[in-house]
Length: 191
Length: 191
DNA sequence: GGCAGACGATAACATTTGTTATCAAATGAA
DNA sequence: TTCATTTGATAACAAATGTTATCGTCTGCC
Image 1 (cartoon, rainbow over the protein chains, first blue to last red):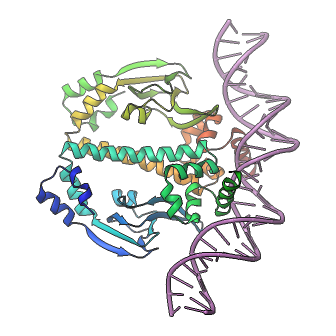
Image 2 (image 1 turned 120 degrees about the horizontal axis):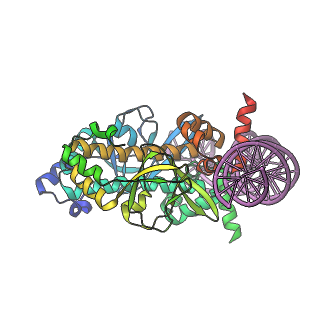
Image 3 (image 1 turned 45 degrees about the vertical axis):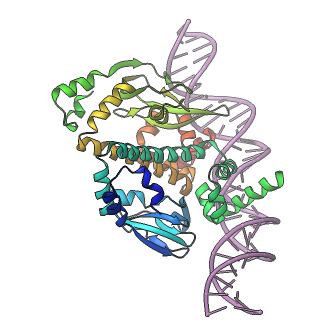
């Protein structure tokens, strides 16, 4: 799991082994809740295999805001960073193999690697990239119809369309399950 | 303009004066374009007085994605950071007093203050905050109706509703100008 | 193998939202 | 002032989207 990242981190063998020693491997079934709404997020998860969604309850409706797949890290980011009660649930979609790390251990690591300019800059890049991704997603809500948003999803994040149950995708796109079904059917019959 | 921030920056008088010396004051009319679509953003603007919107053209429609007011800094952030051609226009809404700084000078400053842990952490906090703001905005598109989104805007960002022409607000909320007008009228007559 | 629950398609109908057009008020420039 | 432009309200109609209900398929589990 970690060897693929080894060459990206200019660290001594000792440090490298210390850091990966903080991670714990778990295997969980589909639909396992990793973080409850209201809980304070203290673990960051790395996905070796499987997929995860972040969702919240709004007036009894299950609304999905994010999907994560292999090699991505997942947490309720606001809760994890600011130690607020999480506004969202974190839940597996497929049976998954995960590696988690305690926030306090991660904080130690980050504090140490911040001194390495190369890693510090990469960290900041990641932060910007995350912001850009959200901006782009927001732009799609003011410029595209739901059908166009679904089309973009197929093109830009095909793994979501392929692996995630459709009713989760519907709320992610901001439409009802019925309407997403209509969009799909229209796409099929037009071509 | 800068004195109000003085106590937030643990810098020597010399450094402080050097840094603020990089800024240039300008006064511009309403509807002045500060950055064209396709241009590479090389200036960051600080607003002393006035307000600014960021917008883009989509199939002939003028779509506004952000508003900025006094004491906020503005740029086409992706273009500014990554040196890409800007996907957006930056334009004043009101007659404004602005202070701008060259990207290269700002980069120098940032490179220097990164060494100060206190400022470095504040910089990272700002980045996270920006991401959280976009997340929140995105959440509102999957959980709220346009009417609820307008209501939240009144409560959370009243200066937008008070100072920005309504047709700019419409696209920001993802609705047509006609529909925003309907939402307002309904809010009035219900209460 | 059979059963319950999850998932998705579809229909019918209600509601929301967009589009186009028109008008009125406010604003700014000559 | 006067005139053109910008801004916003409203009506009428069209299109998109939500809601509720029903049905069929699939899947996991006993």
